[in-house]
Every structure is written in C-alpha cells, then in structure tokens.
Image: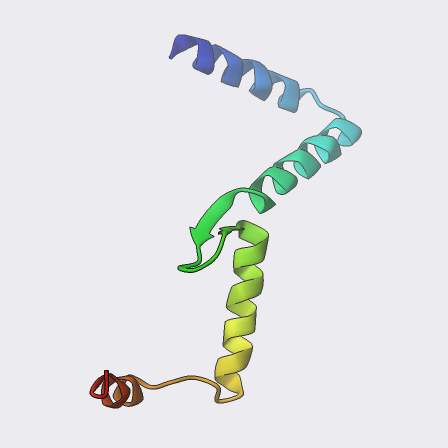
Amino acid sequence: MMAIMDFGNTVINYLNNADERLLNVIKAVVVSYRENDLVAFIVDGPPLTRKQYIKELLNAETEIERGKYTTQYDLEKESENW
C-alpha cells in the first residue's frame, strides 16, 4: 500500500513540474486508456469499451427519435403468445 502511495506522490511531482509536451503525452495516454477500458457487456456479444458503449448509446437514442422502439405494453402483449 505504501509503495502505491509513494508512486502516486512521485507521479504528482512529475505532473507539477511537467512541461506542456509531457502533459499532452500523459493526456493522450489517459484518454486512450479510458476509451479502451471495458465498461459494459452486450447480452449476446463481446464486451464494450467506453468508446463503443458511447457509440451504442448514441445509436439507441437515434433509433428512439425515429420511433423504432417497442413499448412495454407491446412487449407484454407479445409475451402472452410465448
């Protein structure tokens, strides 16, 4: 635990003394790391990265705006025939 804290303090010191070029490199690494971090799973598919998940959400919102969705009422009616 102490090693992690020491490492964190070292990184903070680097950041406090970093020039713009180093900060841009660090930002690029962090953004890439976050975008490739797994954040969700599709029931019948592979895990999604943050970037893929956001894309799926935007696609879903577009479909809803186009009226392409099923209401709970319709699902309940459909399930009566299962």
